[in-house]
Image 1: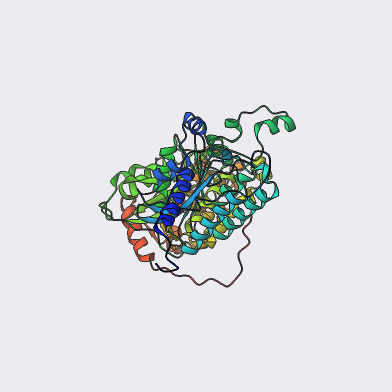
Image 2: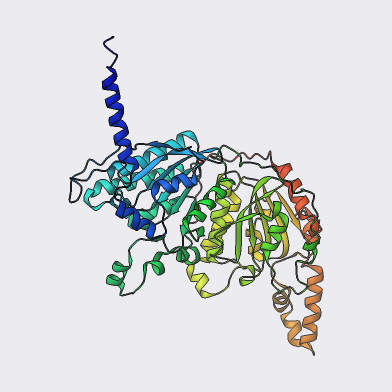
Length: 524
């Protein structure tokens, strides 16, 4: 037997030791903790990974890592994994990196070794150009490890920022996320939450009660619907964990693996030349009557499938992912059913974030316009509508992906320009015959332009009506803009899908050379 050949019984013993360690690493920390987890309607860390990834595709990394720290409750408890399961696998055959915090081990709290495992899969995702999915369910920084835990969080944040716009980063909050733990999800591209079991806040209800006197529950302070409707943190909310993970899989189907790839194109049985006759009756005859912009979107996209982004926040603007002729598109549109589709602080931020995300990952943008202007009022002005509205303007101006504008009805004033007009660089602009392009609405325009004439008129109401009709006929139609080339064509609404499919096909090879710079200075 050679000197390098280990005796058979020694190798078998070592393999037995390895299997014993791995069995411990893969077993729940305590059955009581697992039962408590399931009593809340929650899956375990490994069950979540197994459900999200393709069958038998997960390769775990660092399963045998344990903490090296000393402190109350740590000296005699050194479980393998240190409270986070990490590795890589596939979703629909496409590679992803993933980590899943394990609430049954130290409450999923983050210590030095725990953080280093996350750092490793973050680095691997960027090095290999694959999406990163983080399943968050932890109690924040591990108090016993002090500044080492804080340093670990800092390393995660640094890598989130470095990976931004390079690979898609998805945060799935499936339990508590408090204090510094909230900032990694906030730095990623998409945040998912589950009703009643997900909570995010900088300071918990007890601290809020002590400092401000407010009596608030965890659900009111940082529950899924709070962040989906008020704070603008959670882009997607699900009723349970499995539905949430299903939506993660669906979202990834619209995204490329990294910023150097195109989004995956899929075969579509939906005829790209399909006419949509019902769109001719979508816009009401009365200019102030609302209609549902989502109805237009679902009629135009492949098979009516549309994954909406932030469906419960800033609902006066709609955003989401869909396919047209098999190509992934990002859709932005004013929603006349909510605040008449006006732009305000929240809707500007929502659309700006979505436009920049699409641009980062090579997703063409289709914008449906029906905007009466920006929201007036002291609340908006004091809140910085100028600054926040400029974010959307900046996002469109900066975007280099194919951009197509469709003006459905109102396109008034500065809000028309901001909604991806020809003057800020959209590649193609189309208008329906119902489009109204003007500095402002006819009634307001007549009151300003003809103020003296109306004051002297023997019948001001009749004269106002005549002037409004004249202004509408001469100015609030798409033909004046089309004559100057600000609109590329006025189209039959029934042809919208066909026109978009052809335009996207034409723009597929679009390239832009930008001036060299470190980065732009977005008006944050």
